Image 1 (cartoon, helix red, strand yellow):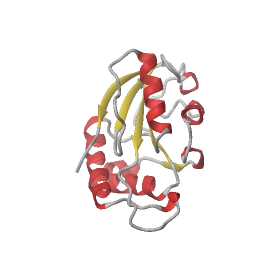
Image 2 (cartoon, helix red, strand yellow):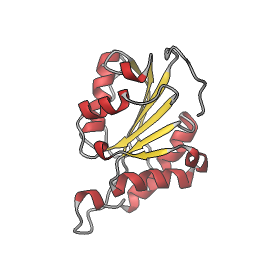
Image 3 (spheres, helix red, strand yellow):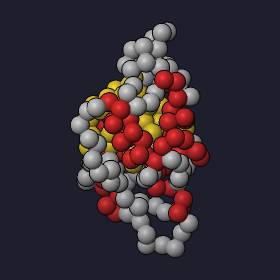
Length: 176
């Protein structure tokens, strides 16, 4: 883990919400099997560079098992090999999840994980970003296109995550 432990669970944590990069519609594939497009591969690498520069190596990555999310993380790691050291957990609950499901998943994470990346899909990830941001009273997140990344500072333990317990630290849409 990159952060120090906090027995009380009160020191700030970071939550990174990342929407997968642009997927391809060139093949007649089930939704979960769609790969990244050429632009998506470039944008995923740009997301890796952005994450390395602004967040650093996370302690945990919760990733949808869909091909486009797994390849987004793989391309980010190719661009920034230090990201490879982060443990990745494929979470079926992230695929096609609403924000309530994503929030419940995050609330179950161990407090030792100081920085968590949630890599998923629309509408769940954008809805969760807006929900957390609305509670913080900070500047709006805005549009949440593919490769969009929102970084929140979370006060308290993961189990207490919710509107008002996170503040928007950064928002970007990396493009390659």
